[in-house]
Length: 365
Image 1: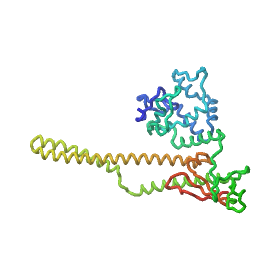
Image 2: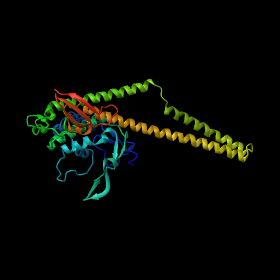
Image 3: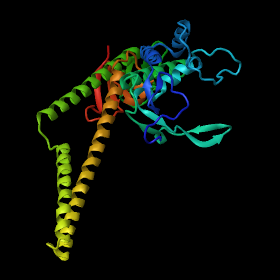
Image 4: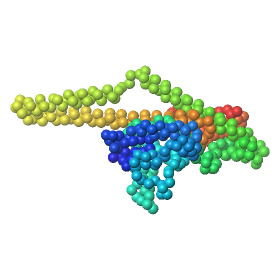
């Protein structure tokens, strides 16, 4: 059931309802589907989960558990009998749920119980089947909302961000002096050294990095557009056309089998000749079917590769809309930033792509 992408729960997840003709298929609920989309929009705009929950409660929007009660579902969600309301945890769980993009995700927990709870599996072991139901949100909106959620959670944690700035001369990490300026502390130990030049205002450096991210992503999108245009102008060998030809050829060959067998039963063809012709027929059918399987496998690989590439570009486009340097940008795109004299920085990208330069030089301020 999981491999088929079928939904297997007593009640439909919030935002959906079960199809009338198939209880294992989800269709969008007109009323709650709009609420789910609005939640993703608010999250993507930078509103925190707590504020979103408060707004929904103020408007009197029934929480998922209350909505299920209104529809006759008898489970008692609150142990104290109190009315359930929207919470920031409920908003977080909803924003992180990939099923709202039309992808069914199943078997996220194992069968082993620890202290009465099923243990979560690594994401690599989940069963994911795409396009099983109509999406409420686009993948781009899902990525953007989750990116903003991660940034909100990081700010609330109070943790210090990763220091990615390094001296371009000695390679040591730059340190702040309390005035918003970062510099190489080697300057305090050696009178004559180039490290004294590695000094920059952190705000200017952060802004330059964000702008560089935008420019690199624009190059990526442009290269992708040019690649598609080039493919449209050429007439490459089409696997799809060969598959259509193979289907017709196999069907035509199978029609020749019966006349051959009739010739043998009528005595017009000897047993030896019949077996010889049958062997040729079987070998040719096997060859054609083998080629068909090879083409089908190739199409599946290309389709998966294309989907992964589209998702990767969607994730990068999400970063292009950022107005500040987030921890997610640092983690996924940047290895380190080297600082030189005259407010020059060299960004060492951490993103493997044919379109990104490995290192790029930028001027701050």
